[in-house]
Image 1 (tube, rainbow, N blue to C red):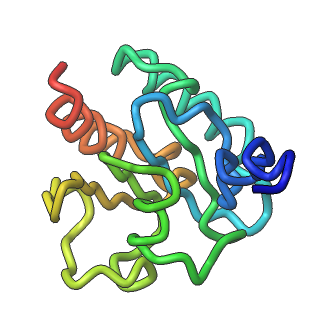
Image 2: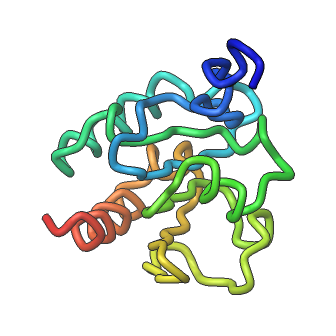
Length: 145
């Protein structure tokens, strides 16, 4: 056995190939679709932070991924890479994720070992009280608040 072979562990194995914000401690994926930003606009980030706080979570608990910058990755890719258990999408469709089902926005869907929630884009939700209310009701259910 060559000296040093065993110790050489590739550092990449722990690092996700999918660029994300947050530490993903609770394996909750927030998937947005925003071509103009690396992740999301400041106002949307404020809304997300407030939602997380209300759900007794923090950015450390989630992985925020911008689908616009990693298209081609399917739901299976996100699950194997980020070990996501709860997947909340904003402006991303079931078809874009290659899921074998279609659901309306704000309908909580269990599939395999994950819980999915599809929503309009964060930008749309930000400016619409009814959409915010719908999202909040779903989050209360998903996170047992």
